[in-house]
Length: 265
Image 1 (cartoon, rainbow, N blue to C red):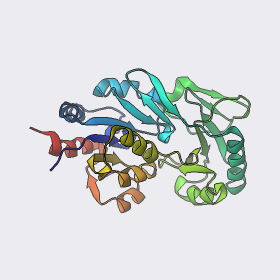
Image 2: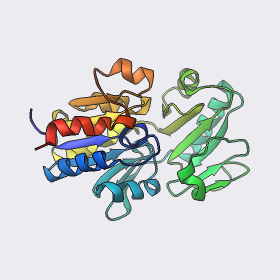
Image 3: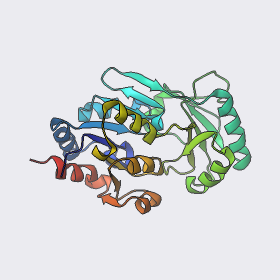
């Protein structure tokens, strides 16, 4: 069994346990992979500001793919290498189309440094509490649109996705992480997999030398790109159905279980 050159892993629901922590076993497995010469790359929907603690806990200080591929981030230097935002006019048009297709939506914007959200927007994550600000309209400030977030209290993302895809009609990239009624919208062509493929080309790494882990629909293309992709046992049903290889859940150190097969002495 040849050793992978790059480990691409999602964070929430994948590398992190249900409490959002890195377990000692997972930390040891990542250290063994890095000692053997493999590069570990976080591939996450999280913005760069929320990976510092995880990077410190794991010793992973290279490149991270954040915000579903919109930001490629140098962890050690603490700076973005590339940022691909939604054109503001296109983002407004997408917002109108989504509101028509799914009445009752409220919106927020990930700017790369914080979250602007409209009244009624109810999807908040604890690690972003210090970085979010309520505004009358997400278009009131000329902030960059790294991700447009659309939330509904009345629908689940599974059912929203089909209607939203038809409404957007290729003008932007839609995905979701199984988080209730939340859709995540990026510029057309911006995906986790696209950013990972570009990073691998720059490094001269073949997809066959990549092992990837994920649990949600926004991970599907990454798992397909990698020569070896693993769905977590706790994955969204579409991921479990689409991905041949499965590992244990994030509560059972599923990433570490696989890495130990490659890198244990």
